[in-house]
Image (cartoon, rainbow, N blue to C red; front, top):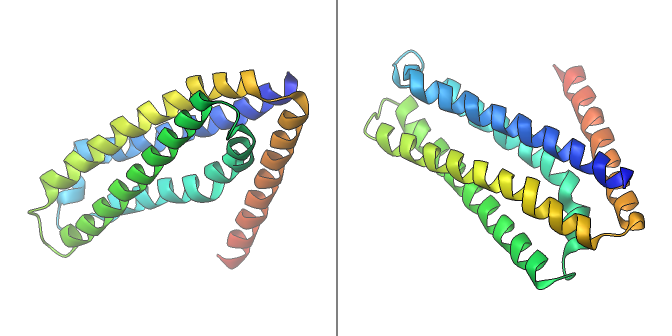
Length: 176
């Protein structure tokens, strides 16, 4: 089905952008420059906020209808959707906690550096596993359970989300 292939091409491309964001965060962690007084954790905070913004405003809206259509189709699909939702909330929580700790580092409190590194490593590992489950298990469940008409609706909703994102980006560009 062409519609399903189009939908998953968009979703996988965005998963790759999320992986790139995770790699940027990991690279910043490895250099250690974020702990220097002149940096005051701002670079790491900015990278986290960019990742959060992309997920919240660009990626997640594209999956809303897919999840709605898939929910209730099979116990396996429902369990997977529940697990993915729980993982997303946990990842969000990890990043929120890291940002609050990074603000302490920015204020000169360096005692939280190891904890931040540990939380961001946990987030990266969980997020990579989460994206892999979406790319494999969610893809498989949706391919088995959705009809052509449902895929057409999903692709239409993805197209609308893309158009809304472009409009949002134009608005930001006009403000800046």
